[in-house]
Length: 188
Image (cartoon, rainbow, N blue to C red; front, side, top):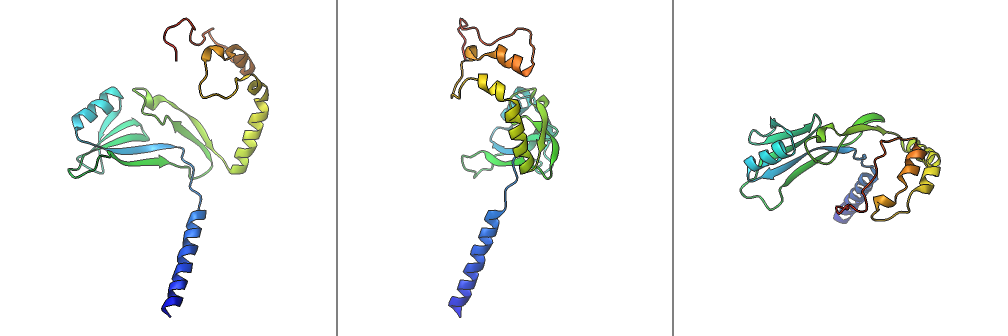
């Protein structure tokens, strides 16, 4: 009887794991917030508040912590380092995921500086079939432009990219600006 019960339990357990493995994870569309531990809260305040330009606010979940907002929907939560904590200073990362199809605001996913909160665009969540149709239509629309792009490489020399032809194909105009002058000693 014990062997039969164990067999039933094992079969149920394996079936449950198979069901869990089939559930798709929603796509990640951005970073909501991250939590870090700091041993020097004043240095963290200087870094997030003064150097990166985030807005300091109290932490509603932990009175000893502080939140630094880069936009209304993105922040870093800084918590005091527990005495017995390991070397890792990362406490958590929270991602944004879509709940339905439609448009949403995309925020810069890098904490890159004082204007980070102003770097945004509009994104769209669509069904897989609509996405595949969009990629095919975009590929067809940009076929002529794709032909004049340089071949794939790990790095590109911006002085060798036919910017004029690309801008013309896209219908873009500019003030005649270019890339780096090859004589400039500061090259990328």
